[in-house]
Length: 68
Image (cartoon, rainbow, N blue to C red; front, side, top):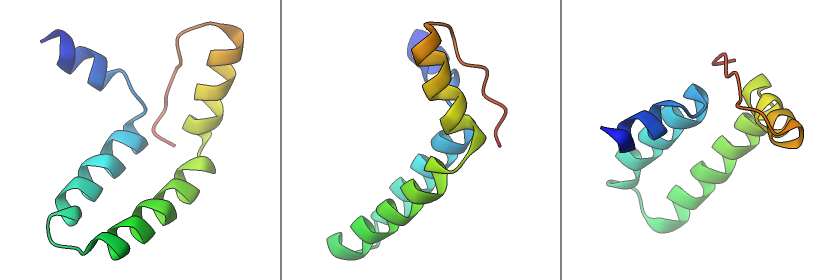
């Protein structure tokens, strides 16, 4: 249960992207999977949740992720 709580406290966009990439990774070759992961990271880096995560780290406070 503790593991699930830690997992759920992370940014929802990142968690959903990770789950999607895991599913797709089962049927993709390594090179295609790598390219899809990198493309997904570029999208996530532009999200408000990414900015919130960085800001909360700098301010030494828990993040308040909105899923945007």
